[in-house]
Length: 130
Picture 1 (cartoon, rainbow, N blue to C red):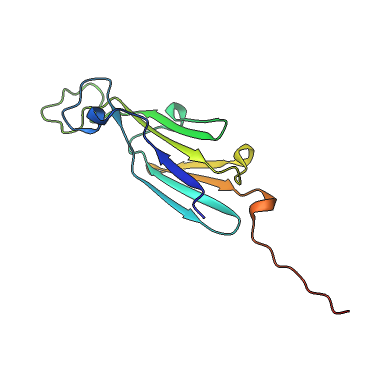
Picture 2: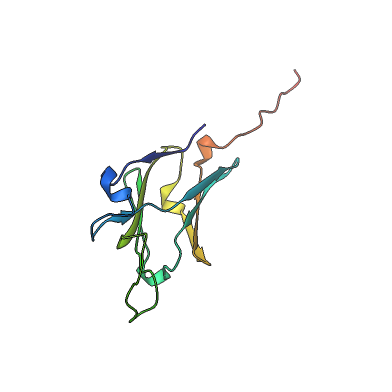
């Protein structure tokens, strides 16, 4: 069962390298599922924990952070990415416990572990002998 559905969060023109200032960069994401939870990995190179925003509004999960290419104080000579922020949203299944999301950021990769509610976890039914 698919627990997460990707939703468009930005207009199509914002996805091109020639985007105008204020454009959004959509980070690459991998999603894995096991019996207890789903794990979402998002590539957010150069993002500091202090500037990362992860919000849940109802069933909508949104990841947002500023994008800063290059060194501070340096002027770009050539750039292919003209965006000033990362942003990605997902609609979550009602079978996930959004109150218990665990988040970690390491080496530019955000890891979100979203546990399933007890009712959605696989379980084994014991059969009794009468």
